[in-house]
Image (cartoon, rainbow, N blue to C red; front, top):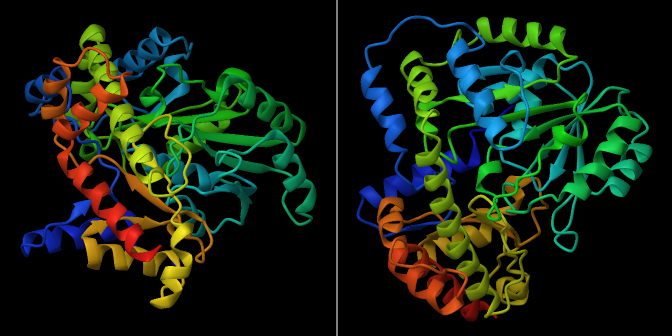
Amino acid sequence: MATKSANLELNEKVKIMQREGCEVYHLAFGQSPFPIPTCFVKGLKDFAESHEYLPVAGTPELRKAISKWHESHGEIIEPEQIMVGTGSKELIFLVMNIFNGDVILVSPGWTTYAPQVRLAKQKCFILQSSMEGQWKVTAENLESFIEEQKDIAKNRLLILNNPGNPSGMVYTANELKELSEVCRKLNITVLSDEIYGLLNFKGQHECMAKWYPEGTLVTSGFSKWSSAGGWRIGYIVLPKNMDTFMSILQSAASQTYSCAPAPMQHAIARGLENQEELEDYIDAERKILKAVGDYCHRELQSVGIKGIQSEGGYYYMPDFEICRAGFAKKGIVNGKEMCSAMLKEVHVALLPGSDFLRSETEFNVRLCYVDFDGKVAMDLLKNYANLDNKSTANIFVKRAAPRVVEGIKRLKAFVQSYS
């Protein structure tokens, strides 16, 4: 039986606590803190009265606009390869439903992947990664994993997330190239979830489809980089040789959600014409998120907490293993109990690694460093020319993200009380 999404469930709990007057530092929910780009908002106002059913795959205008947008970032995609849906989450689920084979998930992985596999009644195999390996899948361990799975189907669907949620890791071009060679050799289709691609802090996102064009489906959307999570507009890009799969996917969509919302499709299609405004917006996001993410890593590291520094998106996966002995004295034996203690004792909300396919006995968490006002942060950024300077970045973060700073301060106190 599928359970409620862990992040949504905790978010609702935190909102109730806050309404009841409890101050909670919410580092558990991956919702962009930034305002939606002005050009998108203006478009929505202009098209608010649009109410017609649209083509299942999305309007021709939006698909062309997405194609042109990708071209401006060095990726050549034909509009016919694109299908728009009600968020990439729904499209990933539909792919799982119609794929004829078994699904491979990477641990750690987004909270929704495994429940979706169960809902789709597919067989699931979990491929473990490690903090020592930067939470990445390597070509070598993927090939070894397949060889060990004697009952896995000959058709395999690997869900790859880049940049990673919950880890914040980013694959390099060479790592993807090596992975593509194994996937090609072992008949592995890749669904590359690249919803955070434009939030790669270096601005150099590498797409799996570049190295494995014939076997990679790419999902993305406007929930993360353009902060339009509630608008529910995502899309999937299929290889040119998968016309039949595209037809089946559209049939499935027509029987479930019909089409993505009309006002949002029209608004985004028009908004994507404003290239300069959007590039400036993304550049500001990257600078702010990198500064805040680096601060979290640096501060927790100062009290002995290990973790791989985030390279994209807005997640960091610190490990509180240093507190294990102290936890044992208080009867805390798993990550979920640890997170409950954090919420109760220091009012910081986090999700345990076990919600992301890690072992219950591990003490790692997903830390979302976005509990701040993104508009305030963007306005402040204009006064800070160089956030690469650690001292300047610290000053900026303390002004732009005071709730994150306070949350980290409380976590440090929590660690010191148990270590």
